Image (cartoon, rainbow, N blue to C red):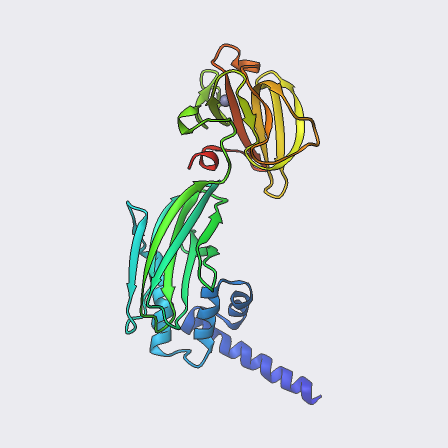
Amino acid sequence: MQFIRFLRVVCVAALVTMPIVALQFGTTPLTDLVRFVMGSPHDRYAVRLTWGPEGGSHAARGWLEAAQASVMTPVRLKQPQYTFRFAREAASAGAIAVTLRRGQRYVVETEIDGAGAEPLFIDVLRNEGTTATSVAHAPEAGGPINVEIDADGEYIVRVQPGLHGDMTVALTMRIEPTLRLPVDQASRRSIGSVYGDPRDGGRRDHHGVDIFAKHGTPVVAAASGIVTRVGTNGLGGNVVWIARPMRGETHYYAHLDRQLVTVGTRVEAGDVIGLVGNTGNARSTPPHLHFGIYTPGGAVDPLPYIAS
Ligand SMILES: [Zn+2]
């Protein structure tokens, strides 16, 4: 009985204090518990600052506000490097905005000077208007961020040292493709027609990219996967479909002169799967590979995947 009475007191106390806490910090113990368990190192530090011995202090509040404010006013760069300087007396955070596309890999490397014992938090956040959600963070022990982007949009790199951070953080960012170009010896210049180009006098859109090469050039798998279809159709001619089940994507290779794989074959990136040709509706055009990427939501633009 006594235990039940105790529980009741705890519940009432929680119900009374939660709105007060929520008003003061814009957060509740429950949401913070979830953040602590599921969140990034930055999230955990923020929760510790809110509820720990420094919770509610001027410095702690300044740190939490700086984290939010930085995301609202990121810098936009023309060059892929930037250096932030953080001083012990002013809790601050820095942020960089970058537009990224599905299929790109985003790498952020850091060089830190004068960190001492203070932690440093570097997060890549997806800007969703009023909120920003972390999609990747640097390892707590230090090291680069390396993240495959799965939605087009604006992203923010936020850099924030711990409460008493006194350090210089130099960032170098780069964007890389996540797939290899699926034609042997091809380069960015080999891509002659892109996603969305009109087809059949504007009656339909081009749902892939065309990579031009000499007749008979090896076509290679853009990524590892399993061959799910090898066949012929009116538009694509000789085609090969390769699924990437873990990514929920299927790759489509069309206009092949010949297919060199069979259904069920497991391929690695770079394995030869066929030869460039002009079968299907490419009969009257120079030989090229039509490469498409399909998701459960439909076709997506392959260009950021192969030539970022
Ligand atoms: Zn095409």
